[in-house]
Image (cartoon, rainbow, N blue to C red; front, side, top):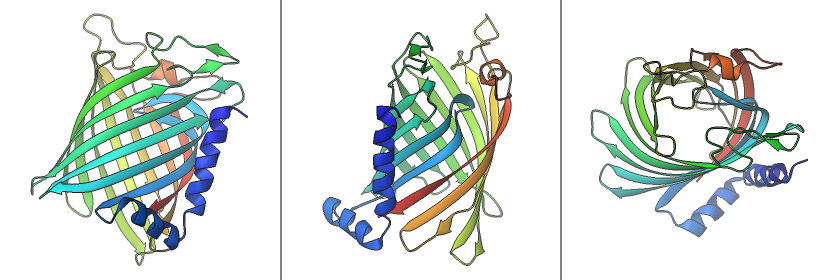
Length: 272
């Protein structure tokens, strides 16, 4: 098993054992009650990011801290790590991001920065041979802006624009999501759907030819079933589909997958 996977499972185990309410209280005592946040870990049968396939059977962990900075203004820091568990393909990725969120009353604006680190290269390595990826990049930096707004019947909508400063590519997305309680406040149903668009050849293998450097990337649809185990711990299984559009079809099609894929997974989260 790869060394990065050992790290992932170590953090995964810590997150699962941190599930008791007392553990959440211990976290609060360490960082203070001015902060809130969540520690989560999970497993997915396939890893797609903005419609682009990166690997199968991925374990991941995520830590987020938030603090109210002023009236209607919140700051947050996010740490993410994922690792493909395939013996042949080595792919691991770590992200660190910071976001300022402003509640305007009619909607919420999120302005963020993310640093991506690709420990095995952007395309990973197969049997020890590293793929070229995009300019053989091992890291990327991004600025993004999201506007979200409550809609009708429990739905909310969002629009995202993200600029990758490393490749000078731009990604756009719009989507909707909703949450409904189906068994009191213990079991819920989450729905989300999003469509992505590549501008300036944003990680799109079959774009970038003159005027054809723009195109739809994908449509992603997900259903999740959050189950509250206690006041702080939630178990969430999900099933999702990634429908590749013109700028993802060639890249996402492989020997054991098509350009449209249904995948699944589960996560455990601890809030504090």
